Image 1 (cartoon, each protein chain N blue to C red):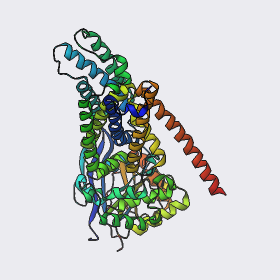
Image 2 (cartoon, rainbow over the protein chains, first blue to last red):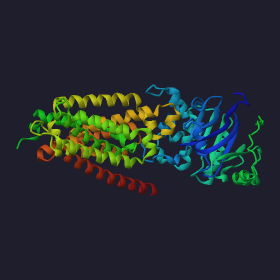
Image 3 (cartoon, chains in turn brown, cyan):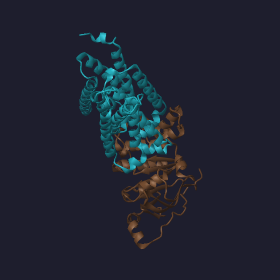
Image 4 (tube, rainbow over the protein chains, first blue to last red):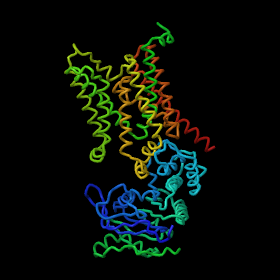
Length: 256
Length: 288
């Protein structure tokens, strides 16, 4: 994989539902290998942007390229980790079968999974240190463990990019830290983009940060300071009020 | 009074038992999907709207189309209702439970209205009681062939699409991202639900369909951790309870549909209590 390959390129994107634009004029470039944090208040359009990147909704305007492809084709490079709390806790499913879902794309329409699929599933579980739980019911696990299983499901599709929606939303601080350590480890092999409404979670692990509140506000500073975070969270109001033009993340060397 | 064993030689009793077994097998698969997808109320709406289809079929017979079987009317209305409830624009624009409620009562009203228009001197119409609460004793050999054929369709469907169905039921967004054609698969599942409901109307009637579809599945859900196991367990449970209910109804001369449903209700209650005791005992053992 070339180091300066562009993982995600968004140009002039506007998107929303039923004619109402939730996000407007978004420009964003994430390079392969980046660890990118997207923060913003609830209702600011984070999940709309995620859905657009995954090709679940069509942009009203502008373009999205995932590793150079349209989202509906580029999403095969993306491992998506949704919020685990949205799932039915009574659904009869084991850890193995959850992670196996990540193999659906490479399996295709064949009715059964192969031995190699099972190998990949076990491998993905061991990457998140959950291999001994493979036969347990998903709801027998703690919040942090469930989160790891859903990360393993994303890894099972052998992605180039992990896209995480609020990965630490319902776990305590210790587990949050361990998930960040895991993501940092995974970042050695793949791009990581995570989305959250909670600025507290943007720790020193994240390489670049941007703020989304209908418009996208970016800051090319790799050193995240308290001052910058404060600005980032207030930026929507400030920047719109002062009419500061949105900046696109300049291409930057990731130090590799 | 004849012995129970003697009854097993009577052809209509044999057909009744076979119909119960085939329907339970269909429910094992489709009822499981209905329960995990939270489509129980939707299945109720589909079932009650098919009452309108039965009325429609009788009315067609009244108009001279004597080949228009009530079961055909039920299939048409059930499938129509399922497709309507599953269509994307309707799901997006309207509250699902309101749409279901409307279909539910409109189907019933249309059925009552049309059956009343039928000249019963010329056309033999089933009693409302038989339509609403089942008439498994009247199962004919051709009914069994139809039920068997529908069961085959369901088995072929689930054999090839089990994994995709599991992903779709668990996480629709992920199914879409993984390249599953969600619209086509959802439609196929809804048609399977409509077909199963039609089989069940024959046995337990429009009103009691929900019991056979959901109770064995709901019981199995308490004790299994895999979707495939839930399907197997609820198939087995359904076969046992339905057969027992049929035999009891013969022995005690009670209505078969209602007897089956009462047995299922009792089994569900016992299972819930059993599960709660089991969990409590387990937690006590763990603490000690």
